Image (cartoon, rainbow, N blue to C red; front, side, top):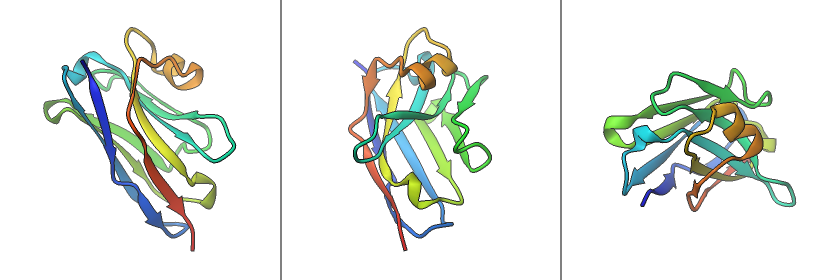
Amino acid sequence: QLQLVESGGGLVQPGGSLRLSCAASGSTLENYPIGWFRQAPGKEREGVACISGRAYATYYADSVKGRFTISRDNDKNTVFLQMNSLKPVATAVYYCAAGLGVTVAAMCVQRSVDVWGQGTQVTVSS
């Protein structure tokens, strides 16, 4: 059974960068589109970036386009989220998630997810 573990969160100043990692075990990652989602206190969980199984397609929320990059290394069973020019509004718990048989747009927008990781905290503050 697929399991996902996030890492790389922490405290960063506005304008700084962080790279999140999502390590998979229990199944072949290439079979799954993977998404990064975030949830700030008092807000709904939202899709940030999603990538298809073989990285042919990606989807980004408008709020992060041009600043965040999602990528994957299927040989290492890991998906990454590079976050640049971070703003305080990006403060949230970030989750990676796997879907099955869904498009990246459906995954990110409709939260069509089968497996969630436990989350990693990202705090953007001076």
